[in-house]
Length: 214
Ligand code: ADP
Ligand code: ADP
Ligand code: ZN
Image (cartoon, rainbow, N blue to C red):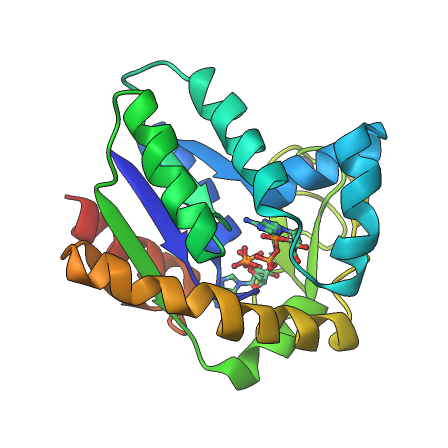
């Protein structure tokens, strides 16, 4: 099974990907996570991407498609892939088809997380993650069970993304509207789009996704 989770920043793609990894042993391919790892490691890609990400703009198609290509090639053939935050442009959607074909795979489903745009700034400005294992949390909607302690690994160190501020979020939303949303009709024509109410509680969204994949 190869699926895309599609939705604007803060829609819940990362949260739902983590659930799918845990429940179904799929692999999450998040270009955002890959880029942040490259920035942290100070690789040439990271050095090039950092300023663009801090502004909330899109990194070049070539960079992100290469990351997906490398990571998909390294996966066992029988493991399902979740594309999280990729593709984000029409060019990337074309790249993905070619990369999948090269690896003997094809796209099974595009799951669109439908969210109310007004809720997204709050979701993103309240987002934080475990500095040790990356588990995702939210100040009010999804805090750790014990304040200050990660549910998953019990670390007490947390971090926030530098681009999770209100101003950058506005740019990221606009990038989504202008460049990412327009790739949906192409997938609709192929009859592979399913929609999920992303405003429901995290567990309900997870059940709705499982029902689609069943
Ligand atoms: P994305 O990967 O689409 O940018 P995330 O999964 O990182 O989104 O979620 C953004 C923030 O919203 C996180 O802080 C997360 O804990 C929270 N969140 C995710 N799904 C929901 C939901 N269904 N209801 C409320 N908050 C949510
Ligand atoms: P979110 O889902 O919250 O918007 P991501 O972690 O997916 O955040 O992406 C963070 C940033 O990384 C984006 O704002 C963009 O600069 C860059 N990025 C991630 N994925 C892509 C992509 N597929 N194409 C271009 N830029 C990307
Ligand atoms: Zn943790």
